[in-house]
Image 1 (cartoon, rainbow, N blue to C red):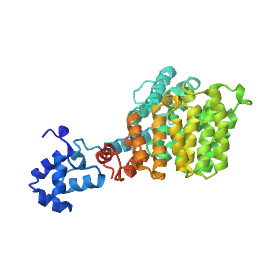
Image 2: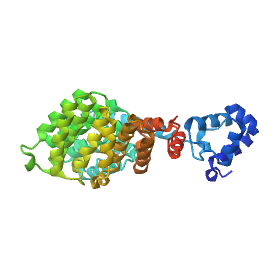
Image 3: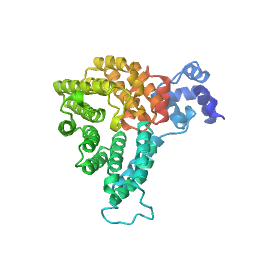
Image 4: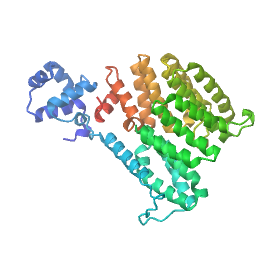
Length: 399
């Protein structure tokens, strides 16, 4: 049987025949009518609910993914866990401070590892998380060795590599390990205000992911005001981007802590800086600009329980040109937040629509992020969920 070319109903009929079940016996085991089975097999009735697909597969003694004509793909989970463990091992080496041999690998010049780090950032911003997880172990080893040989030249690549690791580990649902990477970034950056501010962006992400909202707000505000220009109008775009991004992080931490006044004040301050920077830039890999601040307002509104405001702001902000200029990772992460807002507003159809858009922009955001899989599962359980999302949920083993 060329299963990939058969519709779901035909596959049901095929496997029912393979199991020597009549339509009546099959219907009885499912608790359905013979007419229901006949309509499914003829394609008149769709199997578009996760629970029903799984029941049919159970009776047929096959994996539900087989009914969809796809390979079983709990690989997302397996691949994610393996990636986290590889990074954990890399962060546990202590090769340089303990004076261990480099295993025959040459120490690369700082310029070369800097280019590798830039490539890793680009890969992360394209939301190719499994690939970043593959790159990071060797990249961390290379940049640590380069820093040991030339501390001044390799300091920035070292901090940036730890920043990437921290951001990826937050995505992959490993905040405690991400905390270690962020802490190393801040430590390596100490003495350079701009580098400390850049590392503090990831530290803020990690603290928020760990629900340490007050600590996150305090930490990122301290970093923000160390780099803030005396007069916003005279600030340079790179420093304004760092300061503004840290203010956004502080606002989101305040939202998590329920401090509505602080959210409004901090985002207003960030918006003033964003107006000076403009959209379409990516200073220090922040993606900061007016659109990024407006997207933060969406997240803060959803965090505060005002789902109607969150949805309205989302629909307005994503119509801006600046939306298309943001990295795929940023846009897809925002769409996950928005899907939660649609669910809070009692609109699973809207949630399904933005999840499909997230999957189009950055598939790994749903397939490899625990947060993405959780939202997908919630949307797929609804009877009105788009069939494509239901099929994706079944394929990923999410019920």
